[in-house]
Length: 281
Image 1: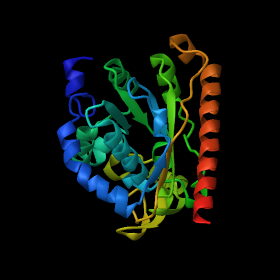
Image 2: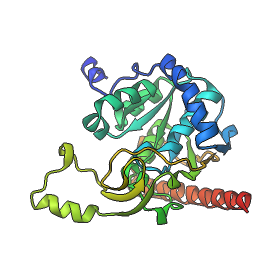
Image 3: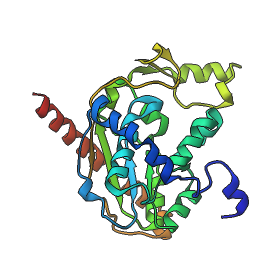
């Protein structure tokens, strides 16, 4: 990777700051213990050494509290110096450079296979939520459905880098932001008729939701999560039969691996929903 590429926002592996993360740990702990009252299990599935592709499905809008709580769990269990980088959508640097800068200090990098591969090359694990904005803003009625939005780049990344996929799932964050529906097709049509996108960025979703601080809000605006209890789980690693560049270039094989991951994560999510409901009853 060239020095010029390293200088671009989101393209550096050296912006991650363990001391900065340590300074946030007391705040994250308060939210973990008292605000979201997190319960979690399955962390024994992550080996004490080695690298993996951590694949999650998340809820709760741009705040994504289940993602933040997963990261806190990683830091408190493995320390802030064990390398893990999270892939973040390029829009973050366009819409809010200040927040994106904070994300970089926490370990966020551009959602691009080149920088992700560079992270693996130095022995780091990589965290990705393939469903992106369609996942985090999916309607409340779809809260128990795994959503990857058809994106298969993470499969190709795992195959090329020859790393296992470790699924991360959660229940509860969908109640921190109640998404009623998505008006994106209508707003997309208005854009085609001349209505410009905010920040000149096509958001891919245009939800209507109930939550803080806006009450009723329209559009993918930032939110502050409601204090709903969150349950997270780290699942059994998924290991494919074949790896390497040839496997990653085989479209049918990539599709099969994608369906396998989606199916197993849906089963795990169904099991977690069942377990949470049993606890409540």
